[in-house]
Image (cartoon, rainbow, N blue to C red; front, top):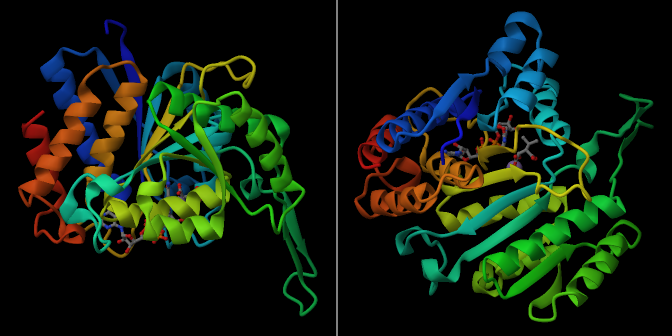
Amino acid sequence: MTQSLRIALLPGDGIGKEVVAVGKALLEAIRARRGLSLELVELDLGADRFLRDGATFPEADQRMVRDECDAVLLGAIGDPRVPSLDYARDILFGLRFGLDLYCNVRPVVCLADSLMPLRDKTASHCNMVVFRENTEGVYVNIGGNFKKGTPDEVAINEDVNTRKGVERVIRAAFQYAVTHGRKRVHMSDKSNAMPYAHGLWQRVFKEVAAEHPQLECKHVYVDALCLQMVRAPESYDVIVTNNLFGDIVTDLGAALQGGLGMAASANVRPDDARWTSVKARCRGLFEPVHGSAPDIAGKDLANPLATVLTVGMMLSHLGVEGVEAQLTQLVRDAVAAGMTTRDLGGDKTTSEVGRWVIDRV
Ligand code: NAD
Ligand code: IPM
Ligand code: MN
């Protein structure tokens, strides 16, 4: 790894600032100890910036991220002082849609038996990866209100599913299963209630599954998936689903991992000219699954381990070898040593947990 990497840090709001501070110090430590050529640039985006000058995601910042950075490490966006959250969508979806990061890869992996909340299950029972479609669905912000504020109000958010959008994320999930030695791929939808949109998912999934006879390919309705993830999480290896369902089932999944403070994610765009016309230096947006947690923000209480795992996913995606495995092991070690924040039953602060991990890199 000789090429120089440039990473944009986007702390954002609430505990995003606290966990990205840990992520930043961790990256600096990895740089120092591995002699990595790594440059960090900080983006001043989020509620503070919006309240200060009205800017959400200015074009100059968009260009800088796209053409001059290899990846973005984001904390979280969302602040109760700005109830509409328009600025948050501008930033988050500006990155996900703008860079066509069509795979939101969310490992639902429980790293320690002590974190497993289910009776009669151990960490070994929870080891799956959710591929969440990340550029379509109800997230496209097509819709509107009619007769707003009256008893006759009509409110519409359209659900957009395109052949290309569905096929590329399903193919990416299969590709992942093949390259990572996973045996099963589940596609989850609600085609019993949504025959047009999710009929498309059904057809594409069957087509792609037929190309992978060595894999066990199954369909599961999303409501049944929620039940089964709790009853028997060991049923799943790779799950592919749409944007909204992927959002919901990965919060449920986080509960199996020990909570939102343990769930990492990567928003990526597999490099394949068939599926994307975007040509950007920036190869991904990496973020813990959790939000800005206003209830604990500013108190040094947030669990930074999801961000530690996210840094591992980011460096791995950028071709830095060995760090992801090391960080994953350090997270296991921290949990085993009781070096944890309140959400995991410990009494340590964000900074203490962060420092403990960084000292051991
Ligand atoms: P949240 O994830 O912020 O918090 C849910 C619960 O989990 C809270 O009780 C919180 O204290 C706890 N929690 C979350 N992360 C934690 C951590 N690292 N350590 C310890 N506890 C943690 O979800 P929410 O309360 O529904 O949303 C708050 C704001 O964040 C909203 O504005 C929402 O839109 C936004 N949000 C942003 C992102 C993102 O930027 N990617 C993701 C989710 C939510
Ligand atoms: C997430 C979040 C976002 C989403 C919100 C903040 C729009 O919940 O990243 O999981 O729904 O994608
Ligand atoms: Mn979410």
